[in-house]
Length: 418
Image (cartoon, rainbow, N blue to C red; front, side, top):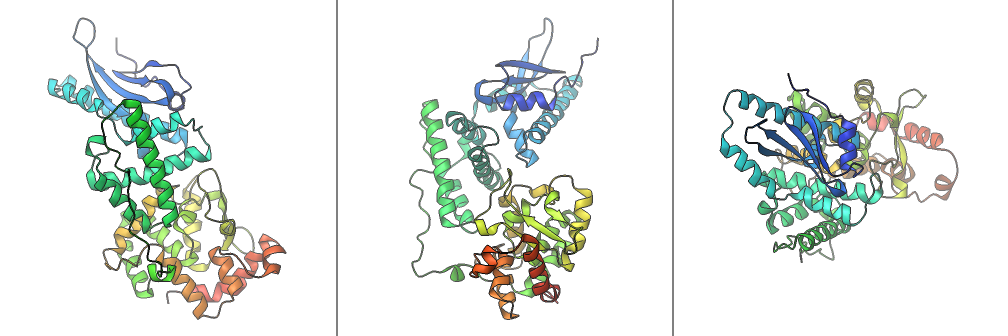
């Protein structure tokens, strides 16, 4: 009798990850098992051998690690991706078994690898011991910090196993983060990882050294201002980057993201967190709403704003609201780090100037608005800065502000890169 496959659902996996299921082993069929442990720590395993045959087990990885491949914080999407990845791995092993190609060494290697903890294990322990609930701000922040370091480690080390993680990884990540967010933000993220490793080391009675212990950031020059740290991106460079990405179909989404950043002057996180429901194409003045939601926070209260959809980026929003279901830029949803890193790779192909970063687009827009005589109120509303005018800050409606921005900036923005 042929064994039944695909017994588990994404909901089963999501429940296991959130700690709702009792500890034990759930079968998906065909030798694939979901091992459920306390606190939502789960593993995928493949078991071969039946009847009187000697049974062998191969670890297919942590459920959460495979879920990270989804690039999402949504529990159902993460669970679905983890289940899909595990089934693909199990199918590959079943095929090798059928062909007699599964060597005993693979089983031994699988067991050995299963014993080596990874970054996901460290963060899961931190989340469990701190009692961070699913959907809470603290849990979302922990996952964001995890993804940032995880992506950096994979890019340079190709493995997130703890025996591969060194002080050099922590230092390189922190240095890169300084180019993306404020020094204070980097210090907060370091504090999270330092605490996570301390809890892991104590819980496991490990002799591992905490890679974040006494981690020092480069000293901040007392005379260095924000203007000194970042340079605006010149129009020629912006156009060159757009042309470079236009030549590669695989970079189409990144190019669209880059163009939207160029014409809005918004922060990377504000655009990567933009949902389809945040785009209004039906009113007299089309606009995007930059607002806080479960998937991301905003830097300041003033960051909450509406920006007109100017002609150069209208096509992007019309196209993406038709094809996407949740986020405008699905590949970078809720992951400004991933987006910033992708943009930085393109920037470094055309310049080695360390003052030119993704945030330089925002500086460029600020310069352009001032040079073209745009009022300070309009500039502040556009970029999400605190508006000096009490009347503008305290009276009127959101719709009125959008119409004011559209009237003040349309002619200026439409000719930005021309």
